[in-house]
Length: 607
Image (cartoon, rainbow, N blue to C red; front, side):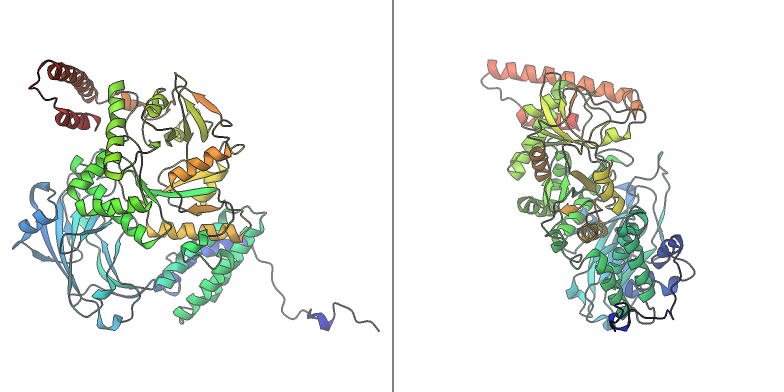
C-alpha cells in the first residue's frame, strides 16, 4: 500500500492539538509602541536597561560654576582668566539664566570603581539649553543641546579611579532662540549632570526596533514586508525577559537581524552592489541671523561643526556638508583648533564645504553687484583655504529666486543648484524636483529639490521613503537627495540618525527593496554627476525659464524698510568708493588702492 505523502513521514501532524488563534493585526501593531515608551509596564520594558550604571553623587561628580557678567560671551582662555578665584559650587536642580547669559562649569569626574570593563563611558548633561564641552587645554570637543545631543563620550583612559577635569560653556538659549518675541528672563534648570555606563546593545536594539516598528506601520497593507516586520517585532517583545536582560537583548537583536540583515552595526551595510535610489548627506543649516543675538551665531557654528567632526571620526561612511563662507571665517577666528580639524576632514572628503556664496542670501533685493560679490567672496575663500571652488550653489532657505541666478552661477564656474523652499508654496505646488533652471539670457543650471521637502530631515523611515516616492521627475531621474540633521538653529545630525539610516539600508536589501535603497558615503558632486549620467547630461530634464517664485513669507519684502534702505545706500556708496579709488590709483602713483579695506566692507554688506 502506498503511503499518503501528508502522513507521518512528512512531519505534518495528523491531529491539531495546539490550535493557533487568528491574530488581530491592529492589536499586534499597536502593541509595539509599549516596548520602547513609558507606561505602566515601563519597568519591564527596554528603556529600563539603556544604562548599566548612572551616578551624579559628589563622590564621582563635582560641579562648580562661574556666571559671566553682562551677557558677554568670552572665549575659553579669556573666560578661564575671569573665572580664576570666582568658581562657586553648584549642583543639579539649580536654575541658570537669564536669557542670553553665559555660565561656565568646571567639572571633575571620577569613574566608579565597579565600572571596570565598561566598553563606553558617557557624561549626560541636560540643562535644556545649548552647551560646549572643552578639555582643560582649551580644546573644543563637542556641542550639546536639548535636541537629542545630551551626551559626551568620555575617554576610556579616564576609567582609572582618578579625578579628571573638563569644562562646559552653557548658553542660556535653546536651538531656536528663546521664543518670538524672545523672553528676556528665561531660566534653565540643570536636570542632569550624570556619569553613565551605557548598555550599548540595549541602545542598539532600541534603534533596531524603531525601524522595525516603522516598517510594520508604514509599509503597504498588501505587502509581505509589512506583515513580516510586525511579526518579527512581536517576536522580539515575546523574547525579551527583564530578569535576564543581557541574554534576552542578544536574542532580540538576533531576531531583528532576520529582517534588518547582519551588517547593520557597521558601514559594511552599504557595501552591496544593489543600486541606491536615495543619497543621504548630513547638513546643518545655521541662520546667520534669526531669533538670537548676532554673536550667538558664532558659537552655534563652533558647537555644531565640532559635533559633526566627532561623528565623522566615529562613522566612516558619514558625509557632512556646510555652506556660508562667512561662518567658516568666524570659525577660523574663534575656534582655530576646530578649523584645523575641519580642513583635514575636507581633504579626506568627509566634511564638504559648499555653496559658493558668502552667506545664504536673498536674491531679489540686492543689486547685481552685490550678487556678484557674494559669489566672489565665497569662491575666493574656498580657493584660498581648501584649494578648490564649489560647483554647486547651495540655497535651501531663502525667500525668493531671481531669474538671473543661473547667469550669475555660470559666470563663477557653478553649474548646479539646490534649494528646497519652493515646497512650502501655499497655493501652487512647484511641479518638479530635478530640472534645468534657465535664466533670461538662456544660461542654465542643473537643479534638484530634495523630494522629502526638507533640509532638516530626522532620517526616519518615512524620510527615506518620501525621498523617492515624492520625486516628481522619476521618468528621467531615479534618485533623490536626503538632507538630514537639525537645522535653522544649528546642531546637525546625531549618531542616532546615522544608525537609523544603516538599518533602513538593511531593510531595503533584505525586504526586496520596497523601501528605496539609501546610501551614505557619497558627495554632492557624486549625486549631481549621477544625475547628469541618467539624464543625457541634463538634456532629458524638463526646463523652467525665469523666476522661481516662492508663495510664502511674502512679508519679508515689505518689512524692516530701514534696513533695506540702508543696504541699498551701502551698495551705492561702494560703487562710488570703488570708482573714486580706481581713478585715484590711476592718476596718482603714490596712492595704493585699498583692496583689503574694500573687501572687508563688502563682506559686511554681503553679510
